[in-house]
Image 1 (tube, rainbow, N blue to C red):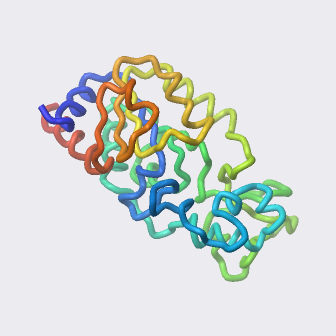
Image 2 (image 1 turned 45 degrees about the horizontal axis):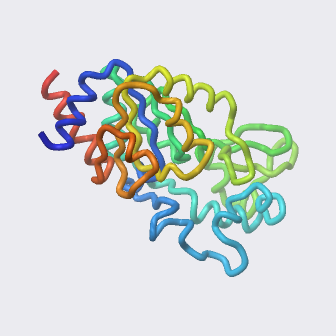
Length: 250
């Protein structure tokens, strides 16, 4: 039995499955990851600042024009569409097997594919809000020509920023606690497309005490040794193939 068949069998026998994913989940949608050889953080985009510095809270405050130029050109992928992995997870939710998607991604592709129970640890580029009064704006507002180079609030004039977690900022405690609860209740956890380097998100797998831990990632992670099944293939194709086998045998 190959890895995809084993994965399909584990999923079929699961009563409470959760998926925890990172940037690798969206690479098949044309969105680059962060830490691979060709990822965003491996590039030198500015002679003075690194990409990590430009994606920080202090950089937003001190250099807002440069921040928004960087963010619009390197962190927003408005033409990206969900890939077959996103749709596979959505189908698992509809079957009642998948109870939650926990993601480090900010692209909103899980929801676009039809998933409803999604915990976005690092926020979403689709939502923006005023730093002063809190008024909400859609992503499209930040892309309008009259909002460039720095989008400002129509009510109070404050800076309108993406509702994402930048470096130097903490995760939303409510989202974090819901993710921990989902993981702690799971009998199966699929970890996919994440290096498990960025904390506190990477530490969430430590709350898993279920029967089956599966890792789908192209490179080695700290969780390889404790995983029942490790798959080094593209995550979208792998999930899609496994769910197809599952659906054919229901």
